[in-house]
Length: 223
Image 1 (tube, rainbow, N blue to C red):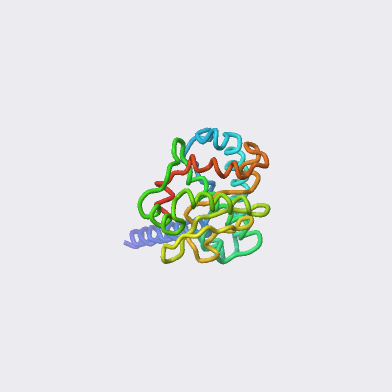
Image 2 (cartoon, rainbow, N blue to C red; image 1 turned 90 degrees about the vertical axis):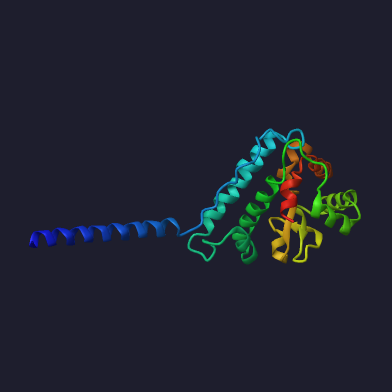
């Protein structure tokens, strides 16, 4: 009888140790959020000739990957290690802000495109654009002009406020409309790495061409 009791005690102890080890491993695995490079929803040559394969591969595979690597190196041990991107961008500054902002910006940017796309938005977003600017063409003109006027590196955004009112926002460097309490709908990257291989210094030409590849189904779903 004694040996049988001993056997059960040892078995229970081993199960308890195993459970504790699993808990410790789970805690370690969930300790920090690890950001990953977003997967493109199209082939790297699918947006040609608007954006070349070489630009996509460098922009997505090199520039964006660097922002992801940097953020993963910066956040461990800080209050940001378990925050999502939007929360980090709203709360941070310096290197954390710059890299988190650029990841958020590019995730919106790259998922806004599709081959054989373009045209005009429909539904509620189209109605809101017409209400704000009179027509889609007027909106495009103002959006392109704002993007061309960004000094240095930055972004031009279509954003909405809590009531659904739309606005065009110019943001420097890696900033995003979320810092103003707005929701980003569509963003064009006007950093030179986004267009220089294809358009050299002709930023305005680049902006005008991007409308040919906008996936309005995806963009409209953000409104």
